[in-house]
Image (cartoon, rainbow over all chains, first blue to last red; front, side, top):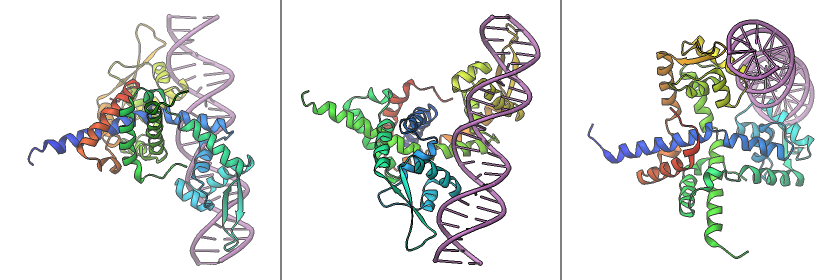
Length: 153
Length: 153
DNA sequence: TATTGTTATACTCTATAACTATA
DNA sequence: TATAGTTATAGAGTATAACAATA
């Protein structure tokens, strides 16, 4: 195969970028932030915060949540129990199919979610050191990369 | 306070960049990759892979590993047991202080680590779609951001 | 019969407490 | 006495299996 400098360079750059993401991941920066956000709104599991963030204005069923979070339905029961206990969500039996329960965000739940996001999305010091131009470029590139991932409320 | 467009823009960009990182984090992309890498080299816990990756050529003590991983020493015992059972590391009593055990990587351990990294550092499809220039820019910016984080072997 | 959700239970990962050996 | 490491045990988080209600 012929030498192809552009391809080789692109591959190396892509790998280097992903290596940095992996380091970010291993640094527990985002992980710790997640636990802080849970503490902020009194949630016991990180799982219940993920569930809270997954609930859109179109109320999902328990099964929808299980699918979105790639976990077992029984665990969703546990997570939604916690959210309901804090008054952040309500279970509503769907009239058209009485097997299904829809998970509806309450006003308190919406406020709690906003507070949790405030903690979660506060950038760490390592990002603050970028110049304005660098920050904008980074945001644009990462937005392109994460376009296919589930949105954040 | 006076209106200061550059600052405001920088803050918004930084937040947007971090929001993307959080989405990447929530997507379980890196998390799943970690489990794949564990399976590749027969490790039971993700923790034991983190430990394997933390071992430098200057063999750390059990306590060094516990400090580096911010976890309890007893858990390090469990992780190193797993690594030793697979022949990836050896415990060596330090001659100058016989309380201390140094964790030495074996040739098998070094090979396993390389295979694990191959899985771990293979960039996901979402990154492959960048152009060569974009990938290079992203790598540079992320390298700057993660400069203060622990390195990856 | 198949699907939604719940309960009861078990497994995995990680921490705490009590202990041994060395300093 | 204090520190390194281990053992035994307990806790948090998540899954599996059996079940009830509805379709």
